[in-house]
Length: 271
Image (cartoon, rainbow, N blue to C red; front, side, top):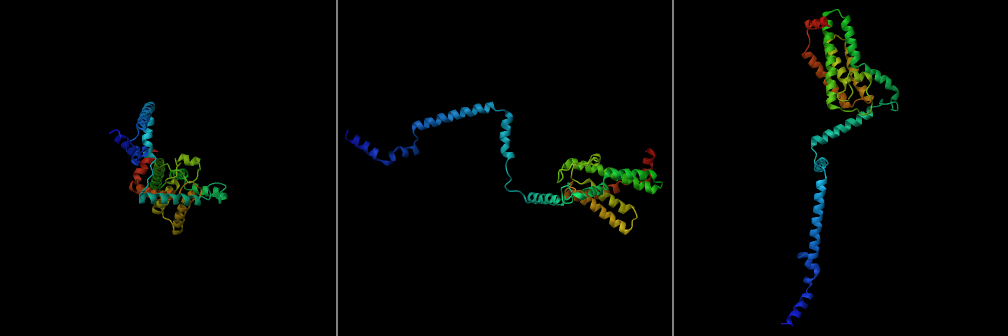
């Protein structure tokens, strides 16, 4: 028996599987296991202390950050198409903004383009309509002018409300003028001048007897005013196009609520 024990010990020592590096794969050493457990306890205690010291707001923010910062790796086709059209709109609007400032390629024509835009402003049109209404002596003329005044007031209110909802800035950082602040035309979408000239041109084409050359000039005037707003950098192309659409819809609204001659006479007598 005493001789067999040294032999078995020698065999165990010579066995490769009994070495420390092989034993550690299946049975970790006690010293390493104890050190790992102690480090885990210390890190757990430190984490608990840190969690107690952090505020509830910081915990909520840390929980929300991964959701807020996540990227949409598989966007929809509608999202891709919308972003592409938006990028094209911004790029083309910036290229057409040739009178955005004095240093632009057409900077010398900025004053003339601004003058063209004033012809589609709401304040001159409201003032001119009131003057014509005071000087008008026919019932038909007063009826048309009263409904025109209603259309202009509705245009200002509708466009101002839509701009407050959208709050879209123009392609260039240009401050609105005094007349723009008076009509609350401070944002880009939709273009107030474009909606107004579209509504006015459709109104005049329907309620005034005009020769064909004057009708063509009226349509060209509306298109030039809309283009001028892009050239001075106040609106995007889509802002002007949407303004034309809203102007036509406003004309249809005025046609639906058209005031009769008796109603107009009553309002004039009150005024």
